[in-house]
Length: 223
Image (cartoon, rainbow, N blue to C red):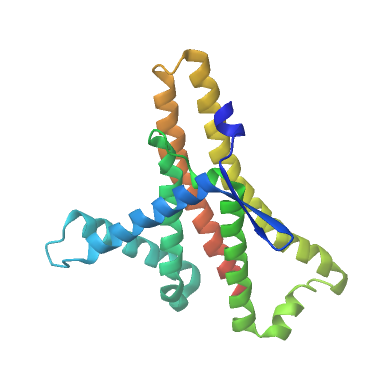
C-alpha cells in the first residue's frame, strides 16, 4: 500500500507559511498538458479536405461538443463549447494515464478535482450574474420564499463537493482495488484487465459525467 500512502512533495517557505505541493500530481498534470498541446499542433498543422488521423479526431470532438453545448445553452453554446471540450479532453487523459505503467492519474488527487469543480462553479455563477443581473441573481436564492436562501446557498456549495468527490472517489477507488487485487494474485492476469476497466471505461465515463454536469450547472445559471 506504499504507493498510496507515500506522497512525493515539494515544500517551500513563503514568509511564515509553509507551502506543500504534490510533485507527482504536478508532473502528471504537466505531462497531460504537453500531450494536449502536441495533439492540437498535430491536428492543425496541415489542415486539408483529406484529414490526417489527428484532424479527424479533433473534428469529431469539435462537432460532438459543439452540438452538446448548443443543445444546453442554445446560441450561447458556441461561446462555451471550447472550454467544455477542453475540460473533457483534460480529464480523459488524466484518467487514462494510470493505465500506463509507472504513471499516475492527476485526478487521484482531490486538489485536482476540487480545483476543477471550483472553476466550474465560478464560471457558472459569473455567467449567471452577467446574464440575469445581480438583483435577479440574488433573488433566485430567495425562491420559493426568502428564508430558504441559506439552504439554496448550501445546495450550490454541495454541487461543488458532489462533482469533485465523485470523480476523485471513482479514480482513487479504482486505484485501491487494482492495488489490493494485484498484491493478492501477484500481478497476474486479473490486474491488467481491472486496470483497463477502471482506467479506460470508468475513466471515460467519469470524465464525461464531470464535463456534462459542469455544462448543466452553467445552463441552469443562465435560465
